[in-house]
Length: 251
Image (cartoon, rainbow, N blue to C red):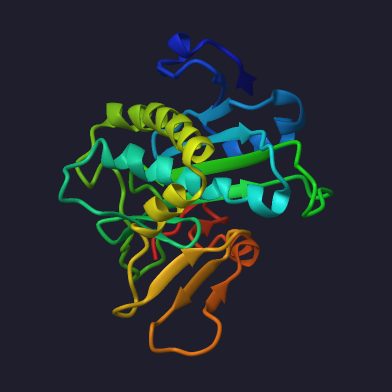
């Protein structure tokens, strides 16, 4: 079941420009966002009201070819991390695993999913993009016998239940700021903010987001091209997501 109601009715305080769609507990915000994106328009925010997860998706309408427009993922991930950071103590770290994994104090908290029209060529401007976010709010996922969870959840990390809704609100505001920054100063500030949250594997390594969204890593002493991690391939793996339990993995 779906309802399209005012932000005030639903208890979310969203900035102007957003159109809120709410789903009941069993609804999949990302899947629903993809299904309505062609007609819904930019700024449609789909929110699934759940106790155990913070789950939402947003429809975007880029103005550049798909090959470079996919970099909107990094603006969305920055907004998600900033939203969490604004509600936690400053000494707690929010970090990324390229490209879509989000960690809180080194425990996997959740991540993002990203979609575009499958019939859109790389050099064409896509009619829509959809970013979906999912964060573990409470530890309700079943574990096999003998397994120990090493993921994080908002409630066990000290967040109040009321703050889970506030994270969605903060994300919406930070997302607008991120795209304004991109428009005014170019993509470089977006890339820097994202890469600052990607842990360094080797001392001295240089990280860069390529024009198509691939991650490039190079050590100063190494010759030859940098190590490349393709964005499209990494997004297809969705390594943080447990499809069986429809939530972030615990391990």
